[in-house]
Image (cartoon, rainbow, N blue to C red):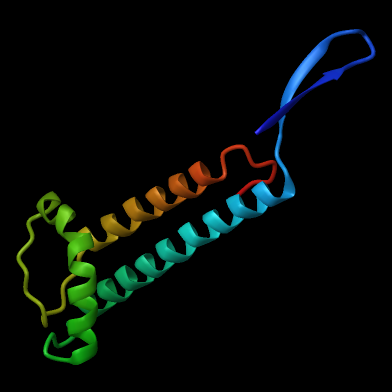
Length: 122
């Protein structure tokens, strides 16, 4: 990153980093990728929550796919509440809601990290 000195009229110097438009573009693309991947994960978790709430049949191909894909992301939160895995029975999955909130926060932090130094907000 280039740095230049700016001499103001009262003879004081200030330094500020200069980023090129190309660097800005790459930071913006990285933030978009983070938001895309995070958004897909959050959408899958929301679908899991709805399927569990409505008691979707785990023998169904779609329900099985959603439960299988999202299981690794929800497992860390199973110990927070008394969890008994009963798929196919309507259940309000608090663990999935906590996972959605935690992963949304992680997504925001990662998007901000990849745009550090950017002049435009992510």
